[in-house]
Image 1 (cartoon, rainbow, N blue to C red):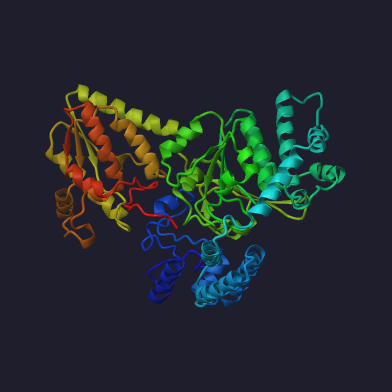
Image 2: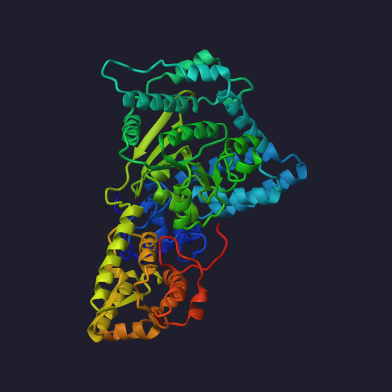
Length: 582
């Protein structure tokens, strides 16, 4: 793997400038587009990144070529593919000659502008052009008739008597004298899953008025699957059925027609006891199912009548957990994009769903180059896409070995252990102080923020007698993100054991730099806890707790100053102003 793949900043100013241009031109720089691009902490819900590692949503080969300014050939080929798809779309759905020509002329102007510098990623170019098309054409759900017809055909096939008879055939079961009921149970689920996966690649089922002959489909259904990826799935499900795990799957749905088979597969998982979250596209993307299709498409509306469709793009961790803890219902969300796979632009809800899942299944072939580059992810990913009719192509990308998942039980245990500790200290006559401070609210200053926090807490400990100061930074465990931290600390904070809740002030920060023998740098001048969305969440909790325990003392900036930032960050303590998403 080349050195450029693992890009190191600070070695070449010209190349660093071109790198910055790459991210800003593609609207992928968080610092420039904080209300469109995922924060570093949100990105880490999905991608496992080392310190200072730079993520890019494209293949390693394409990134290297762009950075080295030699991407003309590969980009030109990809751009031509985009224009071919777009031209076909316009001709198919725009019937008025004047509007069609107007769209072609406008899209040509925009297309030539976007591709001129050979730095735009194909997915970003296509997203922008599709946005122009859907806005200017004023066509409600382009290709909706075709997609709805394909879904209806697939649903009718799965409800047909011929399918039911073939699907429930015992052919393929292996039962011997040593076979247990658990073995049979596993075989039944795997046989049904295999048959549905294989059939989901037979496109004529939903592209023709009549499906292929059931005899030919039986041959497809009963083909063996012996790839390493399939065997991995079999072992994973064996653990589920044996009771070793009760996992959650994030299933990123496919195209129209295929999505009906996806839903049938998901129902199998749910019967086993697996929680399932299905994700679809936010906006129109050719034949991919989008969020509005879930409501407007009669077939999907019928198939999802008992599902929870979550329209909130910024659902909190606790809200998502409440959905997952409810009765065994299918959850349906949007990924927040109209691109194949781009973790930098996915919605908050999608990022949190990815983080809570144990396994992610992708049914999108065009996103593979972004999944199977050198980056590793926080969850196991299985890519399942159709090959030729009756053939499925599976690829597995195991999660990064250092990726850690903290269960709710683990986080609650940590919080309760801390509650027990402070209760013992209170019995001994000690006063309990909780210190809330900026941790990640200033981009690029995380290390300094932790240093400031630790230095000031030690100063307080040396200055105050019989006061136990809880410094959240000292209870951080590697792998935790702020979603985990906030979940854990809220349990402790609501326990009623805090005597003094102190929020970091400007004076605290000035004192910290003084103790370190440094002047306050510009990025820290005037900063206090009100600049942290985590602290903003905590002041609301503190105000609620003070109503229950009026004797609790609040110290720090006035409550009114916290109202400037109302959004709790995404797996982070980063600031973010409320605004629309891209």
